Image (cartoon, rainbow, N blue to C red; front, top):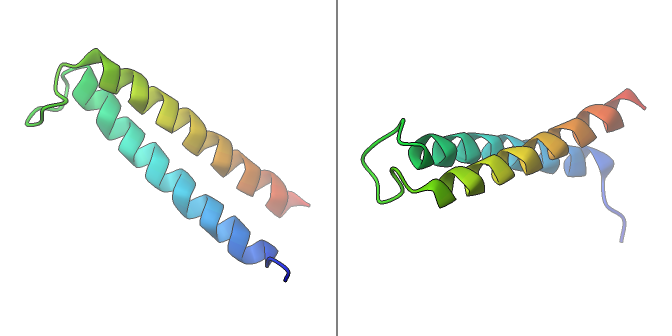
Length: 69
């Protein structure tokens, strides 16, 4: 069973974008810039958000590098 490289790249792209968006939301709520949630003003959510953004960016970089080859 082989994995299609194109499908793998699309999957990484989608997951990377979702992680970046969720991470930005969590970070914003964690620092209190976005209200209306139990996460608002809780510093731990800012940390989780920053980590999610870093993972998302790393996935997006992998997609970009694989498409150059």
